[in-house]
Image 1 (cartoon, helix red, strand yellow):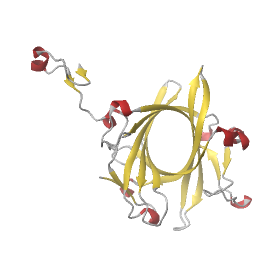
Image 2 (tube, one colour; image 1 turned 90 degrees about the vertical axis):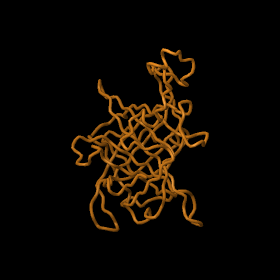
Image 3 (cartoon, helix red, strand yellow; image 1 turned 135 degrees about the horizontal axis):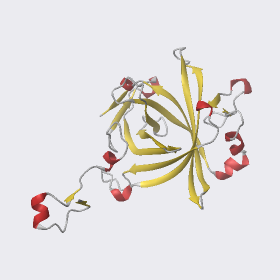
Image 4 (cartoon, one colour; image 1 turned 180 degrees about the vertical axis):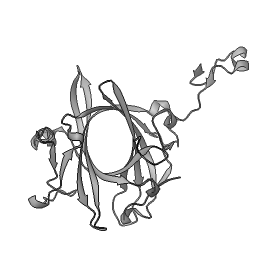
Length: 252
């Protein structure tokens, strides 16, 4: 047995080592393949515009996805870097680690780096028939505007398809670890749990800088609240990104 504060231990418990205070960091109690903690420094070097930026782990999201009688895990390390003076807002990335038995890396995970594309609430989704887009019979998702909201010519609109030809969203539970009080550690009372619906897409495209073909991913994540098993939308976020090699990510 362990206690939250280790108080109230009898002499017998002290001598036998029972009822000790649990000092295990909250980050190490969830699926965390990097064994990283909130606040740690991270370098990401797969694109030139990221070189030299010093990221830190702003929060860790541990995902559980149930499909049938199986549960799958993956982990997001939400990274933030302060942009250079005069270069605008901080840079944010999502470093995602997905278990993969065929991965040659010793951690046995695939590495993805995702960037937020846009986020919006239910009203925007309703006005733009967004749920109809997600329910497309062929599993197709097209991006009609760039990150700044500028329309993209029809013949240049990026087109994605559902991964594994799935149509329905995945229902996920997320444990969010965040140092909300800024004291340098994540305490149990700072944990937050959230429910999400996720639609995953991908496409093959070409890197303008290298001319090489790579697979790009697009994820639509809808945070929801359940009441009588009915999901109420709290907002959508769209991410795009690609897989990177483990050596392109350094954790300090």
